[in-house]
Length: 510
Ligand code: HEC
Image 1 (cartoon, helix red, strand yellow):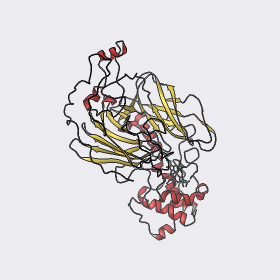
Image 2: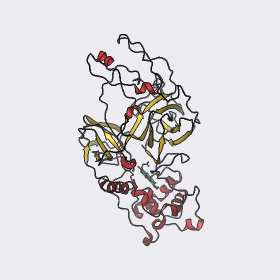
Image 3: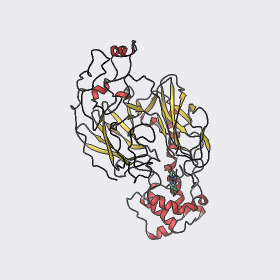
Image 4: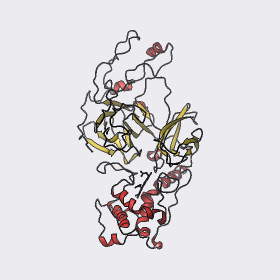
């Protein structure tokens, strides 16, 4: 019962924005606007515009949220009528970058053509207010926590955000509130000051020492092509580990995957990890790493972001894991100055059955687009997300329905960077750009969420393959006596022999 109540609570918060106002079919789902001229001429704020603002805009456009202007009342929205028309006709608002031709997403806030026509007509007609009787009740937007968390952590102290500047990414290490591995139902990130918090990520930092070399997982990516089996055999044999360390402690190889526990972007409700009878397992002990990207808003201010954990009431059937290969890009090849369509391709092969539920492309200032395509073991291809990338928005795409992925399927990721002067975010098109974590470097992080059997080790879920890599034999450092090359591991049973060609996806030139 408690569980049931909790799902209702989460839904109420998460879907507040989509459940208010008249039902969607009143404005239609037709791919083209179908409203006639007479209807459009009669459009007014209270009857027609306000419900759309409630449903699609007020998540961000209200005091205390990310957007600088409020659309809670006629008086506050009226001065923006022309800008609203402009923003929706150009599809700059609400922010959403997925090509509507692929995939369907629970959190898609896009307006229908009729809704766009209504907002445009309202502006064209002089933004009339209309009959107050017809105005829907105001939405009771949640204040405070939405998930009623059991455990709350916070960045250590209020952080000073200056009035001006390019923004900065700050990482805070805080003690892990969990002493043991703990199942959590949701993680809610609450920025202290949403107007300066661009996005927040919560991760369990890797404190495993990185050995001087490994064979399943090169510290410098793209020196080779990883086979699934090699990836699975990533841990170093204990005897070798002790040789390297001068002691008996087994050493784990560096990890191929970054794991993300939670992410916050303006307007996005906390993800409900329990939606699929699943939960997240947060490793106990050590620290948690909270990374906050601050963007000054013109006034010097402070922020103290907090994170709340709602515990699962019982161990789940499935585990919700959010992960990304640490690097798909070929670190040996920087993006040339002025290059407008630099392509990175890579693929991940599933070593276990899984269900895909969420996707989030992450790149930096030169990021342009990212496409995720699933290829089944028998070669069927399906593009599940094709999204433009916009550095201003860290959007996650929640799949409408989970996609069942069979062992042996591949997720092919194709990303493009624009290092030319056409990219308005590009600070310097005359510079070659190298790969790395700094905002001035580039990355290709295709984050995705899967639910898997709760006993699966997320590190062993997938193997990575990159383009531009040769399959030259890896050699081990000479100081390890008697070992000159990686052991010859047979292919995992039931998997196609290597290498498979990457599917030929159309090259984009957006
Ligand atoms: C996810 C949060 C979010 C949602 C949802 C959202 N906005 Fe915005 N909007 C912002 C932010 C943040 C800004 C200011 C920064 C910017 O312009 O990108 C903004 C800016 C604007 C502007 C000003 C643009 C300009 O010319 O300066 C308009 C107009 C606007 N939004 C309209 C809308 C409308 C209409 C909707 C709903 C159909 C909507 N927004 C939904 C976050 C949002």
